[in-house]
Image (cartoon, rainbow, N blue to C red; front, side):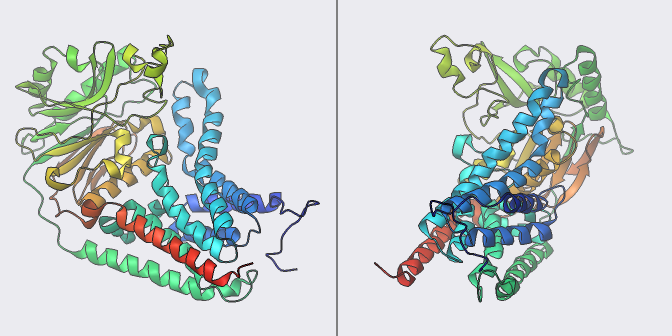
Length: 518
């Protein structure tokens, strides 16, 4: 029997794939996840995605394709986003029981973004190898959609497997979505050039060779870009402070004073030349008091540090609270930025303010339950520094929030508290996405993290200096120079979206030409 022969039930309709096949698909998804940080095994992820495209291509019904993709997505997101259990383990005696449910729901939710492309491919463009090619193209659109739907969660995208390779430089031209396109193109080429029956793997050889050439070209182009001279570092000396405040202890009255003293002492330390930095940067929600109740603290902290301090801090307006960033200096409080893209269910409850109108106030930000969002992305201007766009924690995973055009800043600043993400994959995946924001924008990015990884990231995403996870310390570095605006900063994701839609259009046209009309 041919490998692509349908499995028929008593009704004559194709059945769900066997549990063995579904288990294999879940394994393919897990191998694809190994391309993500901190593993960075792209050479395992890419073949796994290629086999998954083949499995979708040989499915004999939309249901079979959907089941296979769902199993693969479940394996992928269960491994890639396993860090989601960590916030529930900060107080395990209270929230620990929720951890497995959170992981299951996150994995299943992510898997749906693989399921829909497979179902649509088999429904609209059936037949081997066409539906596998359509699946690859629709996966690019699905990665884009994940950055928008339900406020967006563009985490563990197919293109993120290239972040620690020279191929990541493609993001300067086509963004992170362009890296997803590279991934799915390479995964689909064995199908596009297939020779012979679907069950004979030898038929994939011509396309596999072509896929290797495409990856090699992207790799070589990236190496050429990395070899070009970088702009000189600016004369501005920045200090990133990492207090290593454990999340379970961060707000404890005793320990919060210990962590505050660490911040002060690390900020005031002097090297042998006794030269003070131009500015000190503290991480997200660095202190245990509100900005609007800080009294003389801004001037006192700046005086102790011997330099202005930019820090993450909470503030309130009436019953509303904001996750904010500002500066302390001899003049007092500087410009204020309020985080505007909040984490659903982590920093606020969706529709909480709407429910308050019906008397249900326990979830309303306007009643002090969770944060209220700021207005929009912003560029801040601090004395003596180039204009900067702040990104508070979660905001750095969104390419679409980068400010381009006439208002383009001179550098990016991320303050974050990755203590919530645990010690395994989460903090490293967050750092990898910050590196992509630098590549896309052509701007250096300074990253101050509570427990790590703090980093100085150059305009091509290269790491100039890092302070590893769970270490107390500081980084002193010159602010790297910025590159001219990238092609991505001018065009955004539109070229990739249009090319993907064009590819789908060609597949549709080819189907119309090859399928006889009744």
